[in-house]
Image 1 (cartoon, rainbow, N blue to C red):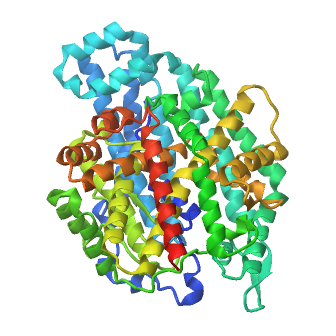
Image 2 (image 1 turned 60 degrees about the vertical axis):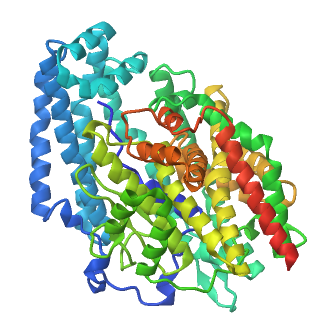
Image 3 (image 1 turned 180 degrees about the vertical axis):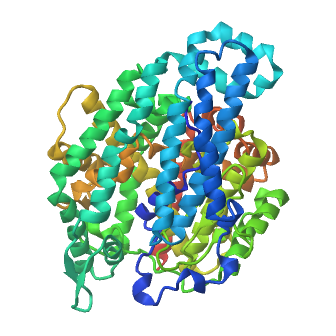
Length: 630
């Protein structure tokens, strides 16, 4: 059977790093405490899933020992509705436990990545996931082989199968793309191998790239790491940020042929699955799991390209703010507006977040307040030695949400908290309103909950500030968020469709091809006033999300939907707010595009994208006017 989605918080974490939301330099500014030194009320409570590792081991054994039970159903799913129901319920019961095993081990590992015990548990849980997938690989091919008429007869014969109607209807929809039981079993076995390109790239990036060193603002030579490079890219010293950017790109250029081969293999893997499952294109194959029309993707690309002048306008404003004759790519990371000189305790951040989300209603606020309050066990607030960096939300069907933070007490940390709370609230409502089989949801849908929360927070702060510097900071933050989440992900998506089409059409790819293709698309998006250095087109070879086909467009699409929905809430549209809450409570029992249509947002048209582009244009104009006022 196809694997349900547990909310993929770690992927959100990756985007936050790309958008510059993480400051990895804390270790240099003060001693990072050990986990035991942090007050327990500021730590999440993973023990709410399993009190001890022994309890985890018992559940692991339960799943492992029950895998063989599926064999008695092989070849017999059509014998009676009761047999089919038994098999589906077994898959649900074991899947639920498998999720708890995987999430518990992952959360414990992220508390302190130096502890090898939990790295080992995570590896075992991942292996068990694959074993369950292999054990149930016969189910869908066998159901499809029964034919639509037989499946519908089985559904009608037992009222308890009504729970699985959407799943079975969706299976009928995708029936022409599901293979024989033997072929599906082979594809399941290929799962770990198909992850090879992504794993190779990750190991290369995490362990083998050498960024060299640079001379910092004080004239001292500093050995570079990935995190330190991003700190130097924000330097007010232009020479330092130039050297940091060159060091970053040069590390990848040295490995460009290896990385190009790795990305090519990933693209060919996508094309293999596309052909094996009889789709017309890699895009169609990737989007079909959630029944998303390819028009949703193409409308995004077309809307941005038809209004590309708004990004060129922002490039001009950036150049104006920085006061430079020539704007280079290494200038894009320096803060255009200095951060507001305010520090917030975690409790103050919680109070601000709840105030900003008041339009969501009393029930939403009550749950959010319970979850964010120190001691609730939801939030892991502060950095500690060995803790995973960044921020994300995770959890299981039977657990409360878990939010990882590395809260630093600045305004950016407040926004990050609102963002992750949005994810957590969507997870909370889905888990309490859907049966387990539908508890997952796509990234496409996931970005709506977080995007709405952050949009409401931003608009609240903009309305309540009278300080010009603070307003400029907020405007810049909002603009940069749209650039990172909407425009940059659209640029990446355009690169993805170009490279996949090259493979589909039998074309050759190489490091030179990838770099030239990325350069052309990037330059088109950013306009003639931005100069891209000789090595900077290597960016097309250093984006880890490209190993997840057509993944990043969902950030842009979800962001556009969130902006449209949040506006309905702010306008006091009760029907719009109710529709948003219904959407946030809907998991995989409905296709995300259909669920958004019910909420009044039609992603099959350009309209949601055009509204976000107009919002961006208006924000840039506001920023420009404030600059002219001096």
